[in-house]
Image (cartoon, rainbow, N blue to C red):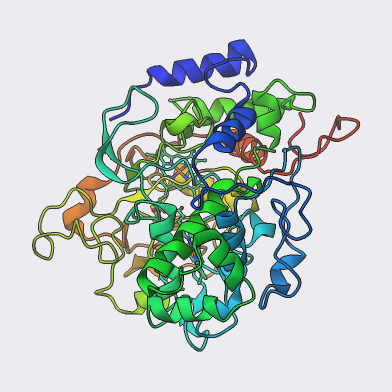
Length: 495
Ligand code: HEC
Ligand code: HEC
């Protein structure tokens, strides 16, 4: 599906231009900020004219001390490292209050920030595959919590989205959540507010009543009109728009403050080490890592750049995760775009051909090194394990999928890898490769490197050195990077 031309361009950035490619990389932080400052993001049409009227209101500062339910998040809110803080619109201020307000959940203990923690790049604060929510706080979700950083550039879902690389043929792409079913951040925000296993409000009116009784009710009216609470459905839409405005406007959702950003902008402190440079090469190399084919880092849609995703949907067929309670039911199979959570691409009949089954959205890899649960079902728990999965899903599937009918070896052979999900070695038996996708849909699995379907027992696409270097490179995508006063000359990820 994808052409490798753009990888040559990417390679030129890496190898020849040292990050000085003006189209692909330069000034991305400034451009993104400028586009938004002037943009029509303010739902109320009102901008705070006096940025010094700030005490609790300036960008990225957590909500006021008197806002209920905000205590856990308050200390954790990120600082604007290297970015120009700017005043939030009234709508975005409301959105920030909503985001941190645990009274907006049926349990009274859960806000957006419980799962999307600003201290963890707005990703989960723990390594759980799925979080617990609901009225009593005991209902498990079905998917891993994504980071909310850099999401505002996401186009709405389309079956044939133009690929931002400008070369690949159009395919399923865009939209929010792992299956793309929400078209905008505002649409998306309504899902957790009402989901029985998340914030579990009974209805939009239930949410609105809580806002009306809350400490920022008058701010809500300032932003959306004195009569804003008269119509519950309209007020619910306003709340969703406010949550979008906060995510769109607040710089903490798109700080562009990683080492990679310094590198891409030719800034001091942005020199990649030898190990990171090699890792970048693996990342873009179509014959080894080939990560950039989907985690695209060139100029993207909506004026974005270096988002490390092309928003495309692919089936890469992660192992089924027994740690998700819903998976105790063998008939529950999360197939992404084709359902069952998303309902507009369901197969005509069970098992009927459907090219969308098994597809999940390619996530950004920015801040990926800060995560401890990976992929849509959180089955993988370290960055190394994620890369090892890509490298050996096909060459050593017994490390990732269960074996049935074999005899466990009392002692594993020396050299039997311990990085897989399966650390027991079997004699005989059959590996249940692709155990979380019905056989009818195995043809949907993407055949690109590094998951090119090569034979079990053959050489994997990446060497151990490639894997180690790739981990180093992905570490440069973490925000809030502070260049050391003196660059180290030895240690991890240096030489
Ligand atoms: C109980 C944990 C939990 C809470 C609370 C929660 N979320 Fe999420 N969030 C998730 C999970 C899990 C997903 C992925 C859902 C899916 O793929 O169906 C997600 C997805 C998202 C996405 C889409 C990101 C992407 O990559 O497309 C956005 C945006 C988002 N949440 C915003 C919010 C907002 C705003 C709130 C508060 C109103 C909130 N979330 C509350 C767990 C949570
Ligand atoms: C064919 C497209 C494709 C290629 C090539 C690809 N990825 Fe992915 N990547 C995806 C998709 C799709 C997902 C989500 C899949 C899912 O959860 O079912 C993903 C998820 C991930 C995740 C989990 C991130 C998170 O937030 O949970 C990591 C880490 C990752 N990829 C790293 C890499 C690396 C490193 C490479 C290169 C060695 C690579 N990917 C190559 C499409 C791709």
